[in-house]
Length: 271
Ligand SMILES: NC(=O)c1ccc[n+]([C@@H]2O[C@H](COP(=O)([O-])OP(=O)(O)OC[C@H]3O[C@@H](n4cnc5c(N)ncnc54)[C@H](OP(=O)(O)O)[C@@H]3O)[C@@H](O)[C@H]2O)c1
Image 1 (cartoon, rainbow, N blue to C red):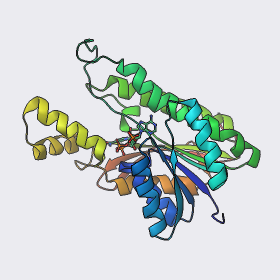
Image 2 (spheres, rainbow, N blue to C red; image 1 turned 90 degrees about the horizontal axis):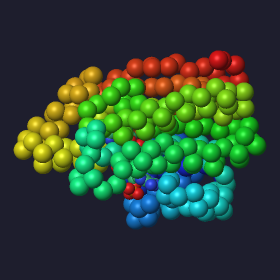
Image 3 (cartoon, protein in one colour; image 1 turned 180 degrees about the vertical axis):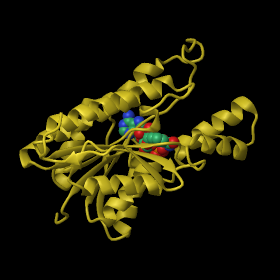
């Protein structure tokens, strides 16, 4: 394996994750396309290789510690321990603040925390020891604008993404002298399958047309446009390539960005 970096991308089999995998493949990393959907991950890994990069699919369920342990063993065999991690796997289910059991048999708060917060935390903590041993690691958390503000009907999602961002801020401080950078992106609504689900729900519940529902979501973004998956992938790849830590980048659509927190060079003590 001659790639300079081994990149683990969770939820790599589709949506934003798939575009991130392509970009990291072009940057010369060995890309581990990780997720529950073996078919999707295999297809994306094939695309990375067809474009001249290196990569492999990795079966991974971020809610299952045994699955994470097995995936990391497989990763080491295929490419070596990951030194780049993109914590991208996530779920978003809309529901009223207090869901009636008849509407929602599962507790959406527990489910969202399990995937979006604990899932990302579990994978991070599993790859961290090897990063610390090497004195080098780059982690990008795919949070959300819902980590910075609230939206109606997604309290569970917003809570889990706020938790992820809080954890990441603390981790950046704790690891700043140890060579491991922790940065985050916070996209507003992205043109991806997750937003397609929201569009379908609005159509179902309000009778709006699909175009009107999509336009409504785009209007929620500060730019009035959906963020593209390419914009998210580009911001992530830039953060992986820097020596900054603690950066939080908000992606507002139309190519626009806001620096929520500028971050600081690794090795410089803050806080
Ligand atoms: N779309 C947006 O508007 C938006 C905005 C801000 C932030 N984000 C964040 O961006 C990330 C990617 O979302 P997306 O828009 O690309 O949506 P997506 O297409 O639904 O992608 C989510 C990915 O997460 C994976 N995943 C879910 N649960 C998993 C688990 N337990 N273990 C492993 N993988 C799991 C899914 O794979 P499976 O096939 O296994 O379900 C899928 O590949 C998410 O963290 C999301 O919260 C999205």
